[in-house]
Length: 148
Image (cartoon, rainbow, N blue to C red):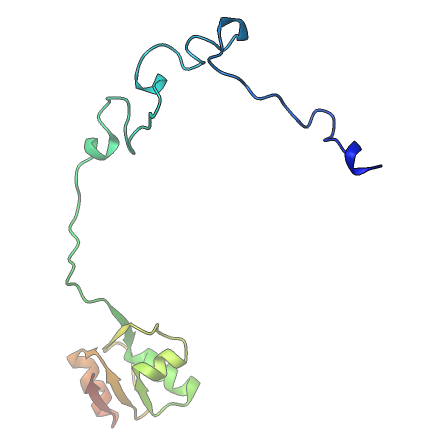
């Protein structure tokens, strides 16, 4: 075997389909694009969502809902879950940093504490928001609350 004798495998190479090269080629005239219309012309590209003149689905369906750009999303923890966290990780203070370090929230999350459950241990909270009931439960257990 020499470099000058190398050839592709039999059947691996196909002839290029030559369109619009006369009627004898079998692909002349309209060049397999049918008769008339935008799709037969060069440079044709349909717009996204175009349904050939039929009313597009995004216009047939009604609008629904409202998105408030000013909404503040909180990652919510109940007081009972805070008690579990204190026992599991042995924490005396729960802040955004400690929750992030233990993989409970992401870096940019805002945290709100709600009052469901019981709190047995004394804990200092540094969070973005807290409900009145949760604040009472934490202070009754001897803990403190600081809003960040």
